[in-house]
Amino acid sequence: MALDKPYLDIPGTIIFDAEQSRKGYWLNQFCMSLMKADNRARFKADERAYLDEWPMTEEQKQAVLARDLNWCMRTGGNIYFLAKIGATDGLSFQQMAGSMTGMTEEEYRDMMIKGGRSPEGNRYLGEDGDAQPQHQPQGAAGKNKGA
Amino acid sequence: MAKISASVYTSHVPAIGAAIDLKKTGEAYWQPLFAGYEYSKEWMKENTPDVIFLVYNDHATAFSLDMIPTFAIGTAAEFIPADEGYGPRPVPKVIGHPELASHIAQSVIQDDFDLTIVNKMEVDHGLTVPLSLMFGEPDAWPCKVIPFAVNVVQYPVPSGRRCFQLGQAIRKAVACFDDDIKVQIWGTGGMSHQLQGARAGLLNREWDNAFLDRLIADPAGLSEVPHIDYVREAGSEGIELVMWLIARGAMSDIQGGPAPTVKHRFYHIPASNTAVGHLILENN
Image (cartoon, rainbow over all chains, first blue to last red; front, side):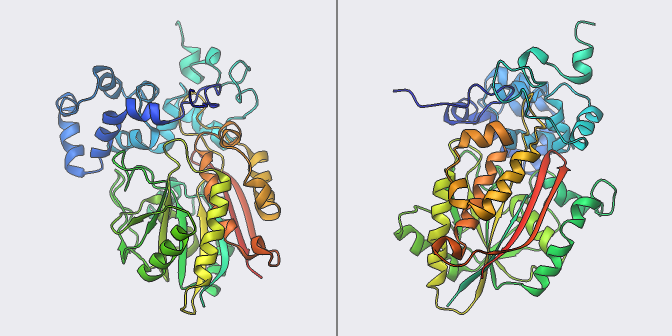
């Protein structure tokens, strides 16, 4: 019998379970290597060459080079591991989280100061909240879509 | 005999640590948050324990995907603050209490909780930010600390019920330690926050405050709340709140003692991506 996964019907959310962990093993272990200053310097000097030292998939490497954290997560990345890439780039956690929404840094920061994203309409897929697939990307990226 | 005197609950947002380290605590953005901990720092001065049993989670720092222990107890003599990618936080090293930690491990494992024993471990913001919030910026932490790391990174994390039961086993273990010392147990992490995906930035003031109410008055009922409710209502990283149930389970009212006194309660939105909650409960 398949395992119960009651968390697949939440919009805009990937739960890092054993399946994601298996898929993202080398991507996440690459991220861990960035906790050493020497490795951060080598990665910054030649990102592609550094990534090629790891048995990651080509898609995972592309996702890292693009700094597309949603793409990284779809390929098995976990946010606490991916945060090491952001730290290497000198980004705050707020900048990293915001980058996954399509909002500008300022838009995301303002949303948080105003009390954050409401859970209303964002609990189940199929509702109409701002985190639902039909409303992506949000903020400036959404307004510029198709322009 | 050793005794648990109080429990403390607080968020451990990394940006709070950065605000302290970069001397930004007086800025308009941060001032309301730190004001909420002024009482706590005074209370800590008058109620400094000998040891803090500090429940937190490691954020892919000491534990990569090489090893993912569900419950890990730090039995080392000291623990060094880790470089999480920005360089290590400029805070004192953490001095452990190997005798009490080993005693708790022996007792709790014999009570059927299969802890992982860790003799070498660096500690990240999950452990050091609560210490900074409660003690400010001393040259050395004024008491010993036993780090207790809970996996809340890879699903499934332990259930609220399991955490609550573990807290009860920890209380029993502390109560049969021969030295006459005062122990506090801290539960950290949360409150509502989501750091990933299109739903990043989710906060839930109503749910968080109901959680605080129930943690005080109905912890056994609260411990039955399933994971999915935390994720749906408090965000994917809001699941950290199960760790608060370990500390709550260690209070004496759970074993039939009198209800604890609520010395302090504070809630603030936002700290970076996160809703901050804080409680101090004293045993009677």
